Every structure is written in C-alpha cells, then in structure tokens.
Amino acid sequence: MILPTPNPQPLTAEEIQAIETFYGAWKLHQPELLDQVCTPDWKDIPLGPGQADGPQGLKDIIVKFTAAFPDVEIILHELFGTHERAGVRAEIVFTNQQQVPGVSGTGNRVSIALHEFHYLKDGKLTHTWHLEQGAFQDYAMFALK
Image (cartoon, rainbow, N blue to C red; front, side, top):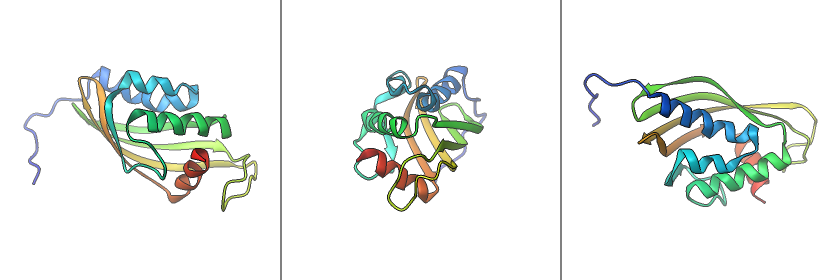
C-alpha cells in the first residue's frame, strides 16, 4: 500500500523542462536530447517489441520513426504531478505516408492518444510507464524493422 506524502511539493521547473524536452525530441528529430533528461538506466515500461532497454532503445525508435514520418510531434495536453512524480496526457500526431503492416499509406493525419507516468530524480527521468492506443505499437514495430 502506498501512503500519500504529507504536504507534497509541486513539480520543479527543472522537472517540467525535462519532460517537455523528452517529448520535444520527436518533433526536433533530436533523440540525443534524451541523454540530457533521462538517467543512463532509465526504464521504459513496457518495452516495445524489439526495443532495447534504456534511453538508447527509445532513441532508436525516434530515429527510425522520424525518418518514416518526418512531421511527427507529440502534443502535450496536460502535465501534472508532484515533485519526482508526473502524469502526462498527450497525443502523437503524424502523416501516414508509409505502408505499415495492417495500415495503408493513406496520406491522412494520424493521432494516437498517449497516457504516461514518469518518475524523476534530480531533474531527470528514471522511469516511464506508458499506455498508447494499440495502433502505435503497429507503427513502432514498423519503425524498428
């Protein structure tokens, strides 16, 4: 059982900036930004099919995903939490110009809801738990191939 922390502190400006940079790496096509905002042993939970552990695993996805869908961005709709704990409601959007297994390259705009929870320590992400609509897994697997 997790007990509430008495008098929780708000997220710090450094923590908010780390989270914004984490998502901004997609639109900027700069996966190396993860090295600035994630600990070297950062955990992505659950890992995608074929995804390596740690920041490098997500950097690999960003490189391949942005190559396949260059207009990708993650739009933050809500960022909330307390010091060292944050929740994010966001969406990943891009134009589907590639034939992905099970999905035609339609040229249509794709929007997939993201719901993620982050643990932070010393202004860096240590763990991220995420839940996306199933379609994102199809695109992520395509990007990793």
